[in-house]
Image (cartoon, rainbow, N blue to C red; front, side):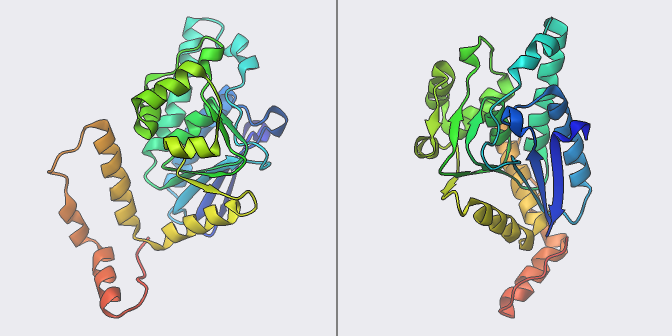
Length: 256
């Protein structure tokens, strides 16, 4: 990958995406935004991968935002600015619509573009060192519609306005209270807790998880109705194995 600013590792059914610009606090470049959908397309087709964790490479920072220094080049006029925004939106959409669970593992600052990435993930775990903020008001940018919707879906409209209007930073306690993050762990245990959770998902029914994500996304988008094909599960091997394992008092061995 270009300059190795994003790294990928696969182990035990878990793919880890590392944001790898520690000298810039993992600030996102245009090229990094463009890499995310490509990586996810590869992982979608890898049957061994059951879930994805996205994190900072150095454990000091998740992502300090977009690389503002790059804006004078990549957003120099309206057409280039629109192109940049399109790539940013595509990255968020790719994370949100990825059919497997995506977990943001946050340590240290998760600001601006970092929060955009985290909000596009299914679940957000943070260490006690997490710091959160969405700061377009500090430089005169307008937060995009998909990104604003994800924020509102997570924290509600009035809290979303508070975060966007003020551009202030939230510590983990307030971020958890707001619903911006889902779990807070001690710094020394967040890696173990996050990967143990991902391993747990790996032994659950993948057809159930995929359907749960699909239905959840459809509900949030307002595009689902009661005609969703819930009965499709009864034609899968998983439900028969699950019922059999329950009767036999053993752990089920679900299909991939």
